Length: 361
Figure 1: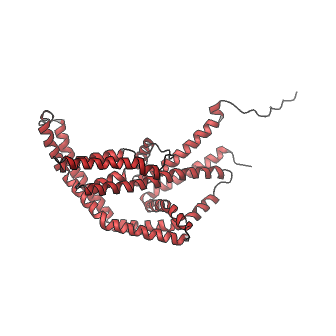
Figure 2 (figure 1 turned 120 degrees about the horizontal axis):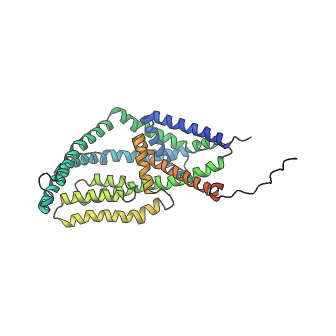
Figure 3 (figure 1 turned 90 degrees about the horizontal axis):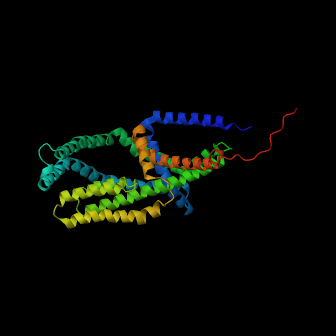
């Protein structure tokens, strides 16, 4: 006899609470495994395609690992030092930028820049805060990133985890499928396929868009001569997954720096603005339609909420898993809504059943 639905819900709720408690207790220890799993999930379609071309799973995984290692070495040797240097310089230059903006506003709008005015005091405080807090943040990040423990974790553990998970990905999926409760296995498989499509469309597609667009912005801004072009381009590309936010914040930052650096050279300022206009055109008409598609179903407000909620609760780990969890919850909510619309609670009608037996006299 099948277990009652209420009892099944009780068991699965207990299992979910235990899982969340374990994840909470592990904290940052699980971070390398999350990153390794995400990398394996991201590269699994590439491995499948290499297998269709005739390579074994082992050779497919080795080829992908060698290519990724080469990419990371190039980034570590060529891009990362420049990115760190420009970030530090940008933080140190912030007070000078604020002072020049203050001088410009004083000359153009003297009425709002008198001694003791709110605008003047705000600009001064912003510049000093960026210099003090930004410098502390950068030095803290660099110190932690360069520590021996973190270097070992992210240089050894993450690639090893990703390699073995990618190598055994199909076997892991088959083992998990074998553990599904038989009564609900078809429904769970359908939900898993929907979740995979949502995450594949958004996670794989949007990460590709972020990388392509961030590289485009960084290269074009550096060619345009913008002093901190690599930092601005990388930042704008990193937050491109939130629609319009990456372009607005990155464009405003780049344009502000261009005004500071090229004041009076309106051609150079126009070139910087045109780079972001072109980037938005390519994103909306080329990159996103081809790589992400239109059937993902993740609303920008839902993404912002997921990032804020999980980031505040689980920290950096929460930010990493926010998008996959948002995709999963979105699929489950849509499934629940469909079942609700089929239920008696929504329709208000009860299906006719066999008549109840009459009681004997």
